[in-house]
Image 1 (cartoon, helix red, strand yellow):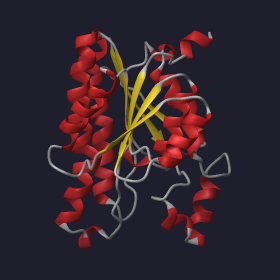
Image 2 (image 1 turned 180 degrees about the vertical axis):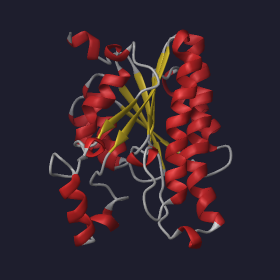
Image 3 (image 1 turned 120 degrees about the horizontal axis):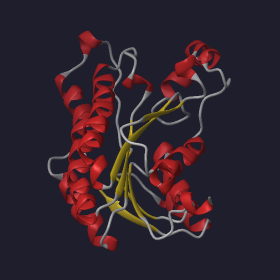
Length: 251
């Protein structure tokens, strides 16, 4: 059974690996035996420290996925590190909060470019490499707002609905080619993105009260889900959106 979840000899690319959910998943993949390539703009020294502390191997690539051509360059750079990518975790994302009537075009395009367009490009380009090798695991990071409308985040909601749709679309095409494409939909987690909500005492309390488990998620709560979807244990799982939400969607 342990071999089903082992990632020994595998290479994982995790975008947005500097902190929060990306960091938690990167460490989890390393703990399962994968060599991890972290991509992002922010300092990744803490991710490196945590991975090396468990005996893992970490490589770092600077990439700004909001820029034209960045996804293609990241694909080339990541493949040059160890010659293969067995696991892709599309975690990088941004959010802009405002009333819909006040949302500026620039904010809309920034969110869509990072959360949706870059995800499409990385799935397409790294997926091609996986198809050629006959195997691979792609894990996109969706959201509760892949199912719900949210408030004051129209671009983010649209992008996360798109992530769910892209996941299913790619899965339909590639399931028979040895490539599994799935997604994780985190619930309310303690991250930089949710700091403004958690700092609002009333909003924080109302959200926590609705979570059956009675608390917000922590980055380490995603380790099991990402290792499952990255390993042989999920070989017959395709196009699935796995909610890791403390029971939010059932409440």
